[in-house]
Amino acid sequence: MKRLLIIIYISFACVRLFSQTGGDNTYEFLNLTHSAFAAATGGLTVSQSRSDLSLPYHNPALLNSSMRNDIALSYSRYLAGINYGYAAYGFGNDSVNNYAIGIGYVNYGSFTEADEAGNITGSFTAAEYVFNFIYSRPVDSLFTIGIDIKPVLSHLEKYFSAGICADIGITYINKESLLSAGLVIKNAGFQIKTYTGNRSESLPFEIQAGVTKQLAHAPLRFTLTLRHLEKYDLTYDYNTSDETVSNSIGENILRHVVLGVELLPGKNFWAGAGLNYQRRAELRTATKAGSAGLSWGFGFNARAFSLAFGRDTYHLAGAANHFSLVLYPGMIFKNRHI
Image (tube, rainbow, N blue to C red; front, side, top):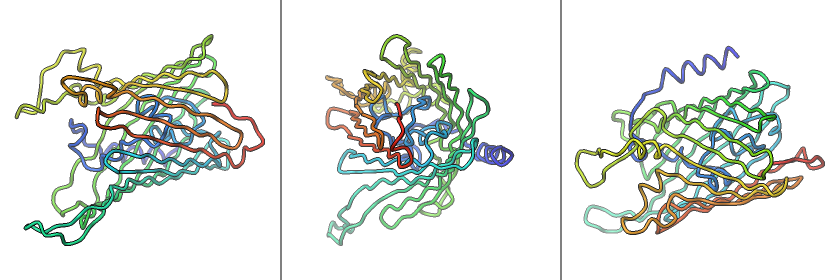
């Protein structure tokens, strides 16, 4: 516990409370989801108490003893030929402390290289990596705390950068009330080495909170997640030079909201859908909103593994497909439930 508190203190000391959102920070790939379930139900979740080893990537306090010896694998086919994936392993040898290690990558593909005159000189690649060292422990029967230390490596053509950040989370899980909640401080850290040797860039820091409630007499479960609690105004006017736009209080509140719903017709199957309001507000066209910001997916659970698929739409021009596989090597002969 003392070590955990020291790490939390250091992480807070490194936090820089910048107000920018997507596109204004380095290592934005840290906000990609590595869970098909999370992708299907809005793109993220910090409060879902499922036995799914891919979910502690969103909140390290979701790591629990039921995930020990599990292996999580995910692959996502993103836009413009970009693909990314994640692999994690959970372990622990006592009744209190839970550990997991993981590695995520994003591959931007191969690009044509040319000089100032436009002459083709070859090709180059671009990729980024994050390593996850996750630790959690229950505080009591209801609360769990967790931390995820994340070294980051980025290689874009001839430019290289390295950094380190941490996610610090807490969850409240009340099984009798079918209620769970979570709070996480994400990507608190700094660049160790910048791309050009100049001043370091800010990381995509944010605070997220969420609550999940399952109905007692209906096969439905609802999740509400709030993003960027550290910043009120998430709007951006792309048509003006002052980089700000005035919106109503309701619009500003809705841009923090991610909604998810699950249908649970049986113990070993689920189907879900979600809405990311900010994504929908920013990426819909002036004439047609289409399915921008909407997501859906499904999955099933067997004794030896769980398999899930999620699809989220960014705009009329494209969507991303996500696949997750969780293996249970030590639980093949035991029943597991989602």
